[in-house]
Figure 1 (spheres, rainbow, N blue to C red):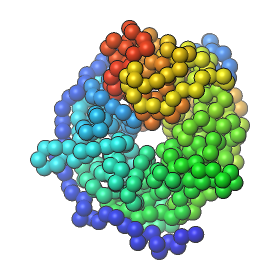
Figure 2: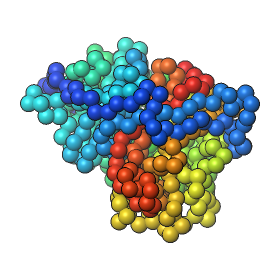
Figure 3: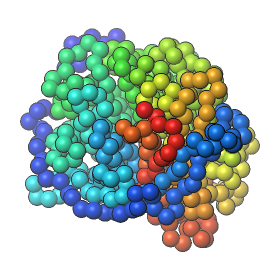
Length: 485
C-alpha cells in the first residue's frame, strides 16, 4: 500500500503553469434543421431484452433519431453537455488541428469555441486522443478539454460555457500517456481547493493502467497510488496491457475503471480516491477487446456494458452493491443487430440509461465470424475478410427508462439512415477505421440522450462499396421517448 503522504511528491504542474485565455474561436461551422439533418435515422424499435420488436403502447412511446453534422473532421469523438443544455464536441483533424465546437440550439448550428493563445492560435496544437468532459456536480458545471501528446497532456477548462478558458500544458501524472480518460466526482477524504470535485486522469502507460488526481480543479496533479490494473494477471501469468474504458465516480466517491482484462469483463474499484484498488470480474461471457464502459446512478447502482466474445453483441450487467457483485448480464441490442463494437454508457437516476455503439445488421455475426483485423485506415488499404465486403455499420443509441425492472423495455435506433452507413466492411473488434478507439454518449438535462460518432463513408462510399472515405464528425440524439431524467 502506498502511503498518502506520497501523493504530494509527484505533482507535475504548478499554478503558474496555468494561463488565463480570454479569447476563443467563434465561427459557425455547420447548420442543420432543429429536427435533424437529412439522413437521420427513423423511429426507434421497442423490445424486451433478447426479444422481438414490440408493438402497441410500447411502440407508440418509442423515440425518433436525429443526426447533426458538426462540419469538421473528427476521430475518437467525445461530447459533454452543460446544465444549460449546451453540447460540446471535440473535433480532431489529422492530429494537427484540434477544435472544440458547441451548439446552443439542439444541433441547429455549431460554432468553434476552442481555447486560444493570445496570438490567435489554438492552445491545443496536437492530440493523439481528443477528450472532453463536463462536470455535472452542483456548483461545478466546468468543461474540461484535454488532449494527449504521449509525453503529457494539454488541459483547458471553462466555467462560462466556453467563452474563456484556463490552460494547463502539464496535466498528467507521468510521461508516456496513451488512451486517456478524464472524469470527476466527490471527494472521500481529501479537502479540495476552490473546486468541489476531484478531477481524475487515467491512462495506459503501455504495461499498466495509471491514474492521477487534481484537488484544485485541474491546476496541479499528483499520482493516486497503486495501478487500477497491473498489466500482468498473477492468476494467469499473462500480460494483459493497460488499456481501459472511461472511468466514473459514484455519489459516494467510489471510483470505477472498466476494461476487458485478459479476455474477461472486469471493473477496478477504489474507495479511497485511487490509493488502492479491488478488481472484480463482472461476468464470464468473455470480451473480444479492452473496450467496456461503466456509469453510476444517483443511488450508487453501477452499470457496466460490453460486447461479448461469443456473439459480439452488447450486454448490460448491473450491480446494486457498489460493484461488489453483479446481476445476470442481459442482451440490450435490438432484434436485428448482428454485431457491435465500441460501447459507451451514461445513466442518471436509477434505471435511466443510454448506451451508444457501432453496429451492423448484415455482418456474418457470431459465433463463427471470420477474424477481422483491428485497424484504423479509412481507405481500401485496410484489409478485411472477404465475408465483410458488403457489410455496413451504423451508429446506434439504445436507451431504457426502467433498466432496473425485472423485465425492462429498451428502445434503439440508428442515428443515421441505414441506407447511408457510417462505415463499410469491418469495424473491429477494437479499432473501427475512421472512428478509431471510442465514441461517447451523454444524457442532457432535458432527459434526451446524445452520442458522438464519425461518418467514415461519405461521397463515393455511399454508392460504391466497399470503399471508405472521409471522417466527418457528427452527433446523434433520440427525442420523444421516455425521459431519462
